[in-house]
Image 1 (cartoon, helix red, strand yellow):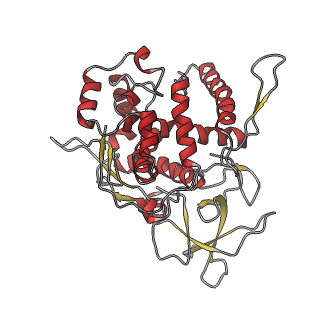
Image 2 (cartoon, rainbow, N blue to C red):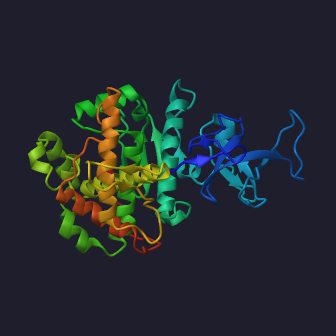
Image 3 (cartoon, helix red, strand yellow):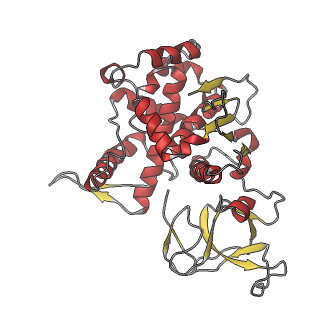
Length: 374
């Protein structure tokens, strides 16, 4: 995610910020202009409210840039739960922002800890929402919108994270760091995060949209394999006999990607979203990297520019960024933040994702659903 700056004082602020730590200005992300704005409370007549007077509307504080006089309301999940930082144009009738409206089912918020778990999930989902929007995948359009349910286990009914017919289910236990690490270790995974889960499951949704309904089944099968093989049996076989590193590393981005072509796509899709988000972050810091004495430096560029960058250029920038990231983590005594080494086979699949994301795509789907569970 790129950096932002406070309209009121120019101080650095971030995508998740709700207040400027320097001047105290109220901040909100404005999806209609893809920016974080410093907001001033206004009444319906445009005047500032008196001290203590409720202010149902907000307007962006003028800065060096010229902004419209658009008025906004804060997402209801911010007012009630501090669970969102998106603003909604005042002319819209919705109480919830376009990201929060994607969540159809919440956990029981009367249960201790569930509100915090839900807040963490929504925060990760907003980051995914913006990445999809910047890739031109229209998360604000109903036919291109995955929906979500965030559920808690109940006795004899464990929640299975997965995707079915446009609905993504996430077990809220994944929002607890200790439980997520326990599952990562038990499943021999090098990486497990909330954002990673959401990116992976969104990959199943977009397989339906871009591959199945986009006329790409033949090209997909040539590279990933035939998805018509039994999905349930493939997962059963994978968990019964997990492959060793030498068995999967030459062709897959992760061990789990080797379980079934659908999982290979979803893991590759999630990895591509990791790539574009981190490259955008590095580019916003104007990062230049020199890997060896006498070698030219590598300048990290914005992966969302138009026309889209070449995949080869993205990879050439990605490798030194990940090396720097892991080196910085080790300097703090932490494990590698990016515990992957991409083989030629894995890169070929990432290139496929890159190519299919960056081309025109269909708008509607009328195909039967498929279910992906993890």
